[in-house]
Image 1 (cartoon, one colour):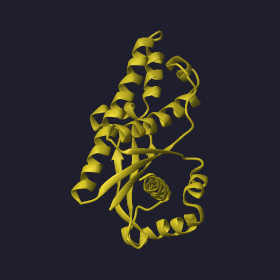
Image 2 (cartoon, rainbow, N blue to C red; image 1 turned 180 degrees about the vertical axis):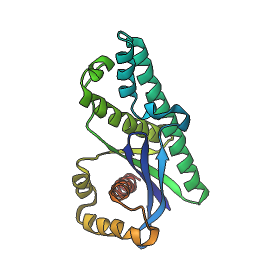
Image 3 (cartoon, rainbow, N blue to C red; image 1 turned 90 degrees about the horizontal axis):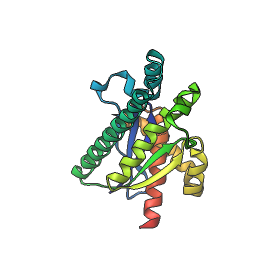
Length: 209
């Protein structure tokens, strides 16, 4: 069957849900797991590289180069791990006899063209930048792994679903909610959002085939 991934990212990790549309038109859950976007050996700083960069500047005023190196290191680590996790997930699906058609990533609003210094100057910008970092790493990984990338607005997911699924959106939401009966916990909002994103990606992939 054709399978689509849905990713709900957080700082340092993401929820992955893989679904397929069965012959009856009902959604089938193929995979569900939490994936790591931070290496265990990196320490907690890698979850919040901008915060780590700010601490480096605070401890050693004028350490601008070190702050930028920490941010670059965090970005590179997230990208590397995202590619590893997406590739491994796609291989598992292929080994089970299915084909991954697309990957949907729930995105936040893009960052303005801020420099590292400008981000570190305002605390709320650091949180925003770190949220964007892991989402963009996953989106990049989906493309790098040769999958069709579908980027969806996390804040506007319901509207995105209505536009993609039309009159079928209510049925989709009902089926996704009932998946808990077969898969058990955890099946909270993160998993439901990731499943809905995957369903949208699957529908778009089918229309473009």
